Picture (cartoon, rainbow, N blue to C red):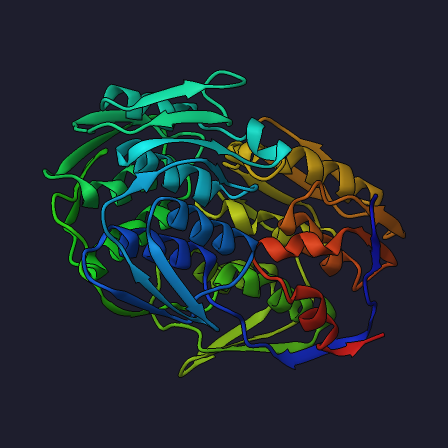
Length: 418
């Protein structure tokens, strides 16, 4: 049964200093490489959320020892052994990063997840792993969860169609650290979300695993990851709604510990919000956004897909239309985000044209609405942002637990809300 959360309206300019927990994407990648290391690894600043908790549980199911004390996690890897069923929830990082590990582990297991996970793209990765020698059986729709995985030796080279999600390529590159020889992966089709590939490569190198790119081919692995201590950056994608609150209301919001250099796609908030007309400044390790009059933008967001819901929320209230393109891969995210954003944005008074890989948003007169979230955390934060300007009730705000469990409390902690 749906539970409805009344989003707080802005009474005027919104302000605050918001400390954002660790990056989900970095936490997941470091967990996988720590699991493949023969040395202990300490991860500081790890994000505790539904996705990362599922990742820890999956690695434990594969025989990895993980101890979590607050945001300091210790991982002791070893020989991977699988049995039973691994719950992937709705987490793309879990279902895709864990599948190659299960395929190399001793024993058999089943990967399954939420109902929504059973329609998320998996075929490109499953087929690539089979070409490498994996034994994977579909228990439902072909090459989708649930999957029965029987451990076997894997070897390359391999080609992968990663056009639906860059996580297929990341999964293979991470798994290469458990292979006796370097793995060459050739990518077929256009690769979306390039910042996430750069993040994977950087994370491999941080664990002393070589990784190089040669055009559309990548070569990585052949050595076990080094252990040691790593520190997770704040999740810059999760900072987006708070920065958007400042941009939308003419307020000022600062995010401390913003890295000077990063592979996170959330680093693009600086240019996105500047394009919208906001003032963006960074001093030392603090990013500050000050809202001005918003103007519509035209932007290729093929590398920035997870930021699109927040951008659409801003576009609803900008002067002039916004055109976002290169985002067809969002149809395979937690929900079909293009369809969801078009439907829910129109409820709020906008006119939204939905194309195969684009959205065009023409603002209208804002109106109150009940916004469905489709079990998608980004749709929940999209609704909260819109709720700053018009009365909005949000379906199941708790879906934000996927990557930011404390979102509702943090949101209400902003100054200037009703």
